[in-house]
Image (cartoon, rainbow, N blue to C red; front, top):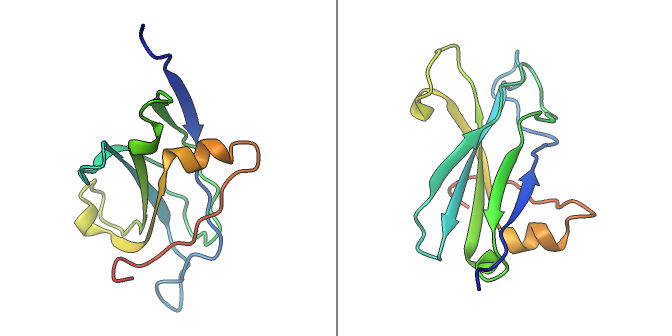
Length: 125
């Protein structure tokens, strides 16, 4: 018998993103990655829109993540926060990396009614 598939809709917001210079706030966007099976291989599943001059963005773009209850504990999600530069490109190296956060999909499902708060970290931490 086939395990029933479920889909979780994930939305992203942030509070207190750092200013990148004295004169301007950030122009944040988020790249969302998924890892399955504990292999540590991250695959991009989507990007949010860019919100100009905002340190507390609430992104409109939503992400659908499919799972079964058999594989839910082996699915990881990573959210990389960037600030868009004036360069009009999808190449992430052209934009300022700000912070990242990871979680297990199971953690999100367990807190589905309350939402989940995670602390952003730099890649060095």
